Amino acid sequence: MSVRSEIIGCGSYLPERILTNDELAEDLDTSDEWIYSRTGIKQRHIVADGELTSDLAFKAASNAVEHADVDAANIDLVILATATPDKTFPATATKVQSMLGLKNGAAFDVQAVCSGFIYGLSIADNFIKTGQAKTAIVIGAETFTKLVDWEDRSTCVLFGDGAGAVVLRAFEDTQAADPSDKHSNKHRGILSTHLHSDGNHVELLQANGGPASTGTVGKVEMEGREVFRHAVQNLSSIVDEALEANNLNYEDVDWLVPHQANKRIIDSTAKKLKMPTDRVVVTVDKHANTSAASIPLALDVAVKDGRIQRGDLVLMEAMGSGFTWGAALVGW
Ligand SMILES: CC(C)(COP(=O)(O)OP(=O)(O)OC[C@H]1O[C@@H](n2cnc3c(N)ncnc32)[C@H](O)[C@@H]1OP(=O)(O)O)[C@@H](O)C(=O)NCCC(=O)NCCS
Image (cartoon, rainbow, N blue to C red; front, side):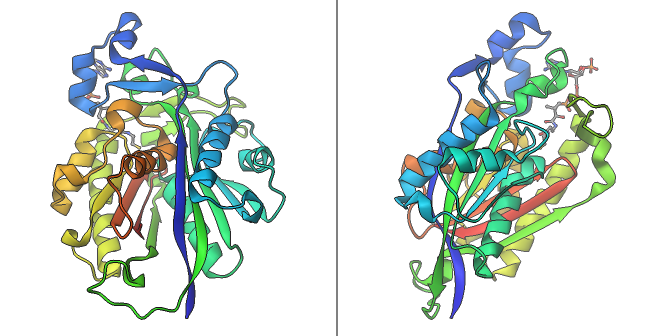
């Protein structure tokens, strides 16, 4: 018998204001055609003045708690994945913990940029497996548009704001695995998580400021082509690693929920997995790249519209600045 974790609910929140490619092209030397053909992005959501990462995180988390139908007081771990915290310190997670009315356990931020949600999920899964937490909430929330240089057309068109969250709960895995039964514990809960990083490529994608260097938050800088090349390589190897670790094949995966950075990167990973496009959740057209929020946002869309069903096997993968990359195989 072992203790494992399962996702029992999800939620998301998007700011009201939508900025379309056409609107962007009014003030910037770009076009809907250029943006859509290179990235698959049509629009992005943008926070209102005074709307903070904690506000988005709180709304997504409340939504997830309601969907999970748990007593919030039982949540003993709050992990917030974000590269756009409200303040340099304290962790925005502690503010969200307070907004949720929670007093138990620990709350902290995780900084792995676009891979942040997978990192947070992995940490929460390990907390639960070791008995240090029983009910966790993992949130990915970003106000990434605060970090973009609106005069740099090669980066500002790519990002958006938003938040997504999942609630994880411990369960005792007492059932003998029955590979023929999708609803057995073989496919129940988080099967495995896989994390990697390689700090040798920091300059390819970064915010060029920080409290210890410039004293400012900085703006996004990116070598787009190089990032694209590394993303395709790293995502391809991480999906292999996740499947091999579980003795599973490409055909066993019901849904691919990738980080939503670029439709062409998503397509290349799906092709590698031989996943038909109708089993790949794509939200990049509507949300753009919301960094750590993108996977839980996409997950919530596909769960709430009924595509992802109980018993389905879901593969999530992400790659981000650092570089960081990771994957999680989850039985829904
Ligand atoms: C950013 C990205 C879409 C750029 O596409 P690309 O084909 O590599 O384009 P390049 O950067 O080589 O630029 C090609 C031309 O388009 C121009 N261009 C860049 N952004 C533009 C825009 N928004 N509108 C119009 N033209 C643009 C460039 O100035 C360049 O013009 P030039 O040839 O006259 O110098 C692409 O590299 C990409 O998707 N990279 C991965 C980014 C990503 O997902 N990052 C996050 C990972 S978490």
